[in-house]
Length: 131
Image (cartoon, rainbow, N blue to C red):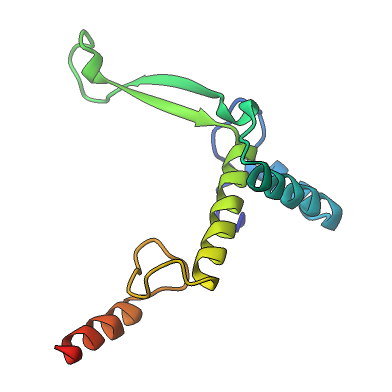
């Protein structure tokens, strides 16, 4: 899951890069601790305040003559790298359980892992053949 993240991403409030996280989770006991924390967030229904902080950087939009209007600036929100990791882990965990327990309608395809265009074609063909 983490392999696709760029090692050169901008640092957030925790000052950790993805390369740091990748080297930490190479150790099996460390990855188990990350999983334990993510599971505890789900079980307790609590999102730590540490994960609710961000840094906002305001960047002027390119190719503008003057910068006298707020519309000419682009705010960028830098989030904690660990927060991003936990959100991804929890999202994948919830999606797995939703699909495995049939909480998602079978023709729901968008935004789900392991669903393809072929799945959409089969669902559409099934609907058309029924009518």
